[in-house]
Length: 78
Image 1 (spheres, rainbow, N blue to C red):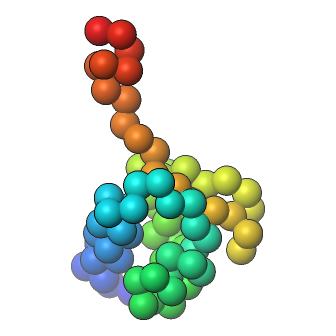
Image 2 (image 1 turned 45 degrees about the vertical axis):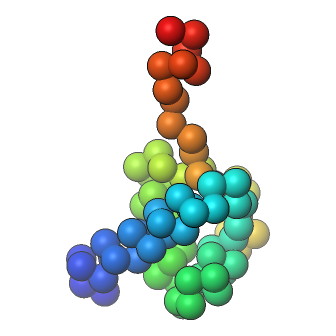
């Protein structure tokens, strides 16, 4: 897949989690919601985990992904 294709998928995933911040879902579930194939979605989910935007809980096809809320200064008592 081209770099622009990977970027488009990452953007779709990011927008999905922005609209659904409390969602915990498998790669297959996210792919179904986005109308995409599971394999490229899974690859980009892993990249978003590496970037710290998402967290993965579990392994393999049963792994679920969720949005990681960024720390705000108010979270630190500032």
